Image 1 (tube, rainbow, N blue to C red):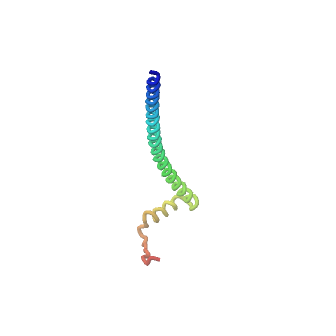
Image 2: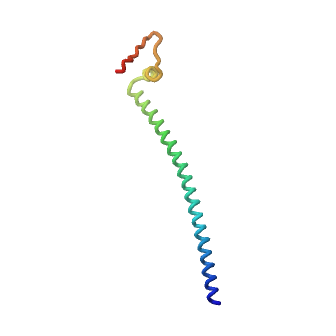
Image 3: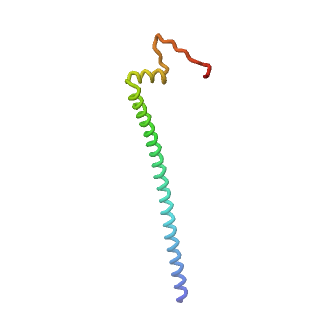
Length: 100
């Protein structure tokens, strides 16, 4: 009789241990999924912030160039000519197509 009680206690302890291990495994998996989700959100935020830094740096460079090169009207005229290909009404523009 004593022996069967001992075996039952071992089986009962074994079942409790398995349930506890299963619960722990579920908790670990849930934690990993949660951390992965948080990591993805933070990576998106980092990408957005890096893009914002790039934009602000470009704006600062433009302002620094404006300060170095003179007045704002000169800067605007130069930007219109270089970036937008604007010309004056009475101006003739020649484009070198020789490739040099």
